Image (cartoon, rainbow, N blue to C red; front, side, top):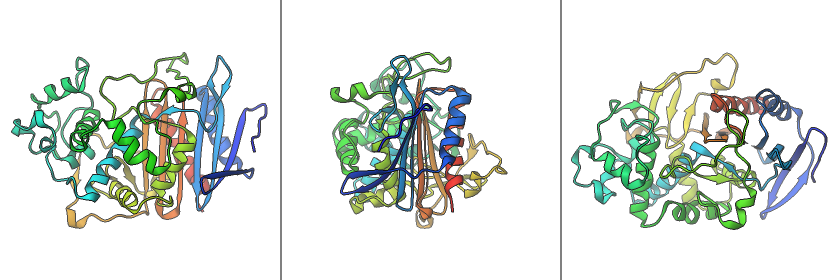
Length: 379
């Protein structure tokens, strides 16, 4: 059932059985108020919200995919996920870890032929790349325009941070992406679609949108509110290039909460990504792609902690243990989009938010929206 009113709300309460959606309307005002308030304050054209709690779920679609054409957001609208792509890349790695094909302690140069002679990269393990503790900078120099150029740049590698320091790195994740491509002998998008998206029941879109889905893209809007460009970085594919709709992210959200009807090996891989691999500061840890937070972060008294360049203590292999009594989350940003995913596995509650406008410090805005919704619906 679709409800359409002057506020342009689309409310979907989903119940999935055998991949069939049945829609009913029973939606609390809390999420609508949280999202609508932010959309008005920041002049956000459109938003999709995906929420799940203990078998109950909804999709909420607000506003426009395209302001000029008055094209409304729906469950098929495609958003850029930005750095939530890193969670998918790390899940691909975890599948290989679970199958024994790769090991976290392996040096990345073991998988990348062009780097094998550069022994100074020997200590750059797959785990360090996936946990942002490799010492690599946030981005490679802007003069680098290809994967080949990135690899050439790394032959002259000089860490800007000491190893065992947490420092967010896009091209560290790209090095991980290249290692996966070399190990699996295929392109990143092909691996992503065949090994993750299709097994999860998601559409085969990934980072390369098939022609038949192009018309579903939301229009991106920049900080000035004007239409901007779609993500077109020449090699930041594994760290920022995924597209997804709310119906697809609903399936991923269920997998992240451990309630999806999927292969056991994929469930195991998800838990590997959600296990603490490095401990950072003030109850903040890092898994593979996920930030792992104490649940106190959901409440107004919480004081945000900046973990950039903080010492990161590696967790020894035999001390690593999965716990679902935490908030695992990730934000994403591109030229004209922000996205957020947050899950508390033990409480079987999670949320995804996607918007089609970039804002100053917009990742903080969308993260706060997501955490506010989680707090509102916790029992």
